[in-house]
Image 1: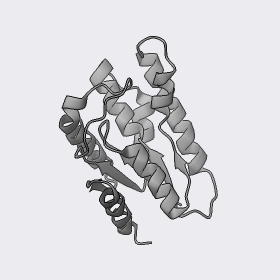
Image 2: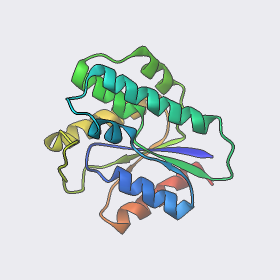
Image 3: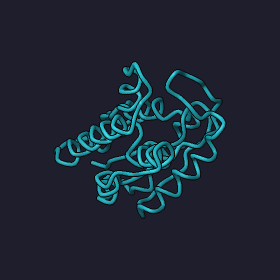
Length: 172
């Protein structure tokens, strides 16, 4: 089973794309845990909160790392690289357990969503004006893994088709 990370700046269609790809390929997808976690907080998130988010993401990866399935894919709505960047940006420190897990090379392919969709504010999103900055940062972090990635852009059905086409690099 190919493990696909769908990542990118805020409001770039990651969740929609994860759901669409899962439907198209009749495969599972893992929702973004950070959104659920932060939406349930009654105070601003802390370093410890982001550690809790990272640990849950690792649990989700481990579940699929050790599972046997007839599915071709599992799609993850965001990944630990996004969490790593958030640690660095917000707290100027990255926990070793997170760095070590990223080095494990869990994902087979990253789909990096371009910030070419219109910004849609919501209570959890924070950096609408910085999407290009974060896009470049995510790309640099992905490149450091040595894993393949494809930038996914386009509006509506074209974005989905571009993502489907990107999966061809896996030589199915």
